[in-house]
Length: 292
Image (cartoon, rainbow, N blue to C red; front, side, top):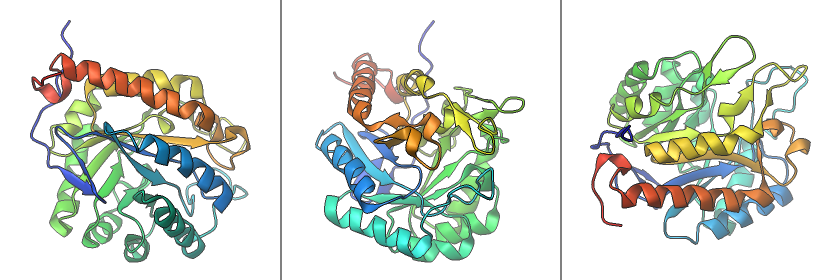
């Protein structure tokens, strides 16, 4: 059976100094789930900066200032927008990495765009027109996560909303689909389907292994499945990949069960890039023959 080809012809999206799309290095979006402290952020950013020294990958630091969609009201949400943006600004200044975070309300878009190079729209909010429009109007590119309840074909309307409101560009992100209660599955067909809409596609490897509501008031997960899913997505030919990583995932206040331990992260990225180089060498990446 031949490897499925992802259609060419996507609009390249600029994220800080990087380009994401056809014939570009893999864009790696990574960081902790939620901002905790400068010390933890710096520890993670140090590893990401080292990975960014490679010429076959471009790295964006991601962390949330507010996790507004927690299972329980008692869950840790983060430092809040103002202190969180200050932390992200320090990371950007110290490392030179572009930074991104998610927004939940339209009136957050402008302030976040002053600090972040990429605005992320959470999956539960992918259909919120006012949020998409406000984010796009900033001129920043968007990373819109496909809702767990949405068909990949329906993401065309998200793209239409964003491109009508701004010209910063859009990426679409797959992060799993609801399968009954407490379980997500990945339909890998969604990757070429969303890419056929003419935009780069991101695969969120860590949120794809979540087990919603399985953690007694929190979301569980299975980090052992992160790498197998990431390998499959890279082999298909996605443009970007998203991970959450932490020095001590089990102590993270959010999503620890599906995070990659920081001391294992570089090895994981290296293995994925080896797969990507192999796919390129046989002319399958993005459906085009390329020299090895």
